[in-house]
Image 1: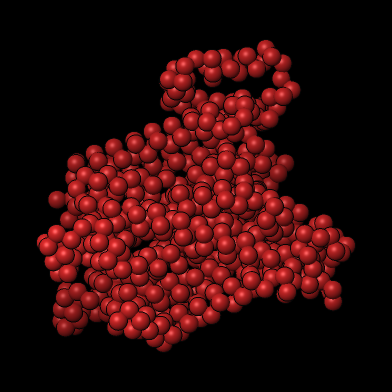
Image 2: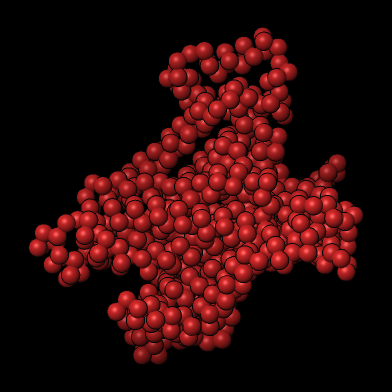
Length: 322
Length: 285
């Protein structure tokens, strides 16, 4: 067990190290003035003293190895640099946006897993029936839809046409809601983006749960339970579902990256002030340091969540635990 | 023998409703892409009407913010989305086959190194990395294909590796090895033919993913500015606020429906191919 975790840990350290190196090299390897990538398009308007200060800060006058050392040191002390477009330290921007993304993706993952597991169980239990075929077709259609488009359609229908939900943002602008009112306001803003995220990410859980449940239902102990006359509900939920859940845990980990990626696009549609939207804004304004920082923070989140899932896995699977 | 095998595939695909539907959809889209100049009423790049026109006799799906015919844009957009999807999938499957075959056949240190690499690639959050790369190397037709395929080879590689592992233990491969057949002959005559069917189903699945990814990148403004795909059309619809007005019905709905249908076409085809390859699934139904 310890060996498994250690090798996983090593793997994640390598991922982070590689992504940091990629981030370090991108602005320095691209043709053109690296200053533009480090400080934004405004470089043309800067005085030579200001340029000198930026060169100094990133140590661009030093050797590449010294630069790399400085870069790594900055990242690990929580200094992601400065956004010259937004005129603010990037770390502040990230901290402001991160909670919203965690709220959206966290809830999205939990809800889509629950829905996927439930429908996957039903579908497998009624294998070969019309219910199964309908569910399969429906979930395949869901996974074929582009996430941002689902979001746009939901906004068009439920926000613009029917007016049931706000069109964008995470909170009403210029309102000073407190307590319960603020909570309701946040929930109202969350409904549509969350629905979109659940709709696009539910299929992978459903497919895996259905497949895993089909395998479990073929096992001898299920036959045995049936032969003994155990109640259908007990077989379904206690015997079969619990054992079929294991592969879902693996998919849960793998879908973290997908969900965070999906959130990037969905946050853009809803102008939801999360890290994904920040990444889009920085792409629009060609704010390269900010693009890199948002990418890094998303990668860190995925890696940390993966590792947490690895830690929890043995609790689910007694075979790994022993 | 080979011919019979393909005929059997065809029989299973065509006896399977989903597969037949999938292939028909793909054929229809292929025809639209090829015949776009004949089908489209206008040049999609020309300003032919008043901006923001509602659908009418001349413009069946209205016009966009600079007066281009949306229907013509959609018909021509089929070419871009289909081409990017297929090319990106093709490159990633070729990479996946290379890695999978080398890894599975040679085993040992090469195998464990390559599989570690696959694990690494699978952990990285896909879309954000693509956004980062696309932002730095700049949006263009080939860059998008490059970015998608460089990041999509990992899971096909794993599937193909496990197929190679199975093939390696087959009697005829072991026989060929024991009589000292050259590696080249074994790989090309014995391993590759066994890998191709799985590679085909992986390719179809990869194409459906690539189309969705291309749409997302274009929607984020990272698509090729000179070739309008369906995702690009939606980018403009979003940027001009079309989805907040009645225009959502003719400007936002159609491109998304087309993307969904094309992806479904690939997915259904892939699903039925998998059924052929995995007879256990077939019997269960």
